[in-house]
Length: 437
Ligand code: NAP
Image 1 (cartoon, rainbow, N blue to C red):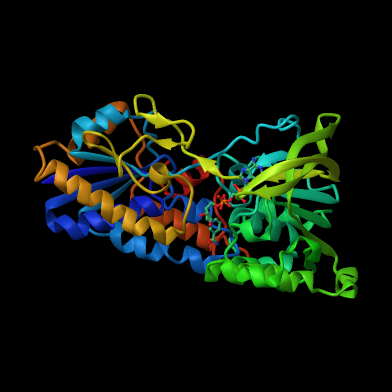
Image 2 (cartoon, rainbow, N blue to C red):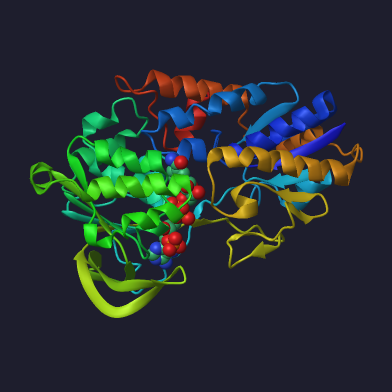
């Protein structure tokens, strides 16, 4: 019997478990650990609450989770409750599928001012991640600035721009919905240090911005390259840029009628946050020019009002003591998923925060191939029995997949009308709903 521990129950974790099932069938036992009592990582806490169709992928993970040879080991923090070295002693392979849950630091003067957040924190807030549920961003100012030109920046701008009615059918948590309903933000600037041809926004997601109830996107036509130059772009990027062109063509009277404006400010690199009484009020940016694909400052600076700032500039993984880490890339040091003998990584923990949820599937299959090459038929390790003994000795309060199903049912039962669920945002409430305390 081969024993595998996967740390992290997000897409990378479940795809790895699915791959291990395909590879070894009944000859493998997989334990999927998560520090939270609830599974699915990024699907639950990262994917936008108004993107329910994307969240539907977790049904596929249910099938894996409910099979006999895979189990969910929730509410166990690797590094605190049990060390990686201990797991390596118990399992033939330990796979870190811990994602990239931390914000890359903005590293600008004023970044520690109040009401300046990274996207991990801000997205975690509206998605009800226990770590960020208490963030309490102040939405009483008129201007928000979203830094970055990726899909997360789009998510954040869209969430800030929507009316409460547009969250019908979304699993946005009540505290965020209430705060957004009272929001005074009427102007959202999306700041890109490079230009329209360099955006990292996908066409479907960008197109959504053109279909909001009270908000209109604004693009300055002067920022757009000559249309003929779009031919050099790959087809997806060309479609995204076509959306920007259609935004640039929106007539002034439509802007005048819109209650909220989402404005793209391209060729604008953030340089400093300016505050009053400890909180953000403006952002200083420097005009850039593109040289060989890089944004070069021109020395020309200006200020944009910024009562709320959300930096959506990418994520990094959490280092684990004793596990080699590549600081500059913010991920574990690895060779195609191999970190050390018996220790692997997959997904964002392996390659950094890029790609879609589906990108993790081939990743999972690839790491399982490496495990198969390295560990053969296993080394008669104790696996889950050994872990259960350790958990008992330490008094760990392990949450199973069946427990999670009870939490899930309780969340569904307390949903507001038309919403799929109302998440618990507190670990104790999750445990309580599992009916075990
Ligand atoms: P991303 O796609 O890497 O975008 C990061 C953005 O931040 C880039 O525009 C980058 O500009 C900019 N940036 C980085 N450092 C900066 C700095 N110091 N100052 C100003 N701008 C800076 O990252 P993401 O938006 O966090 O998304 C992560 C991954 O999740 C992506 O693969 C994304 O597609 C995916 N995702 C997908 C969806 C969806 O499919 N619906 C939703 C959300 C996220 P440069 O290009 O100039 O470096």
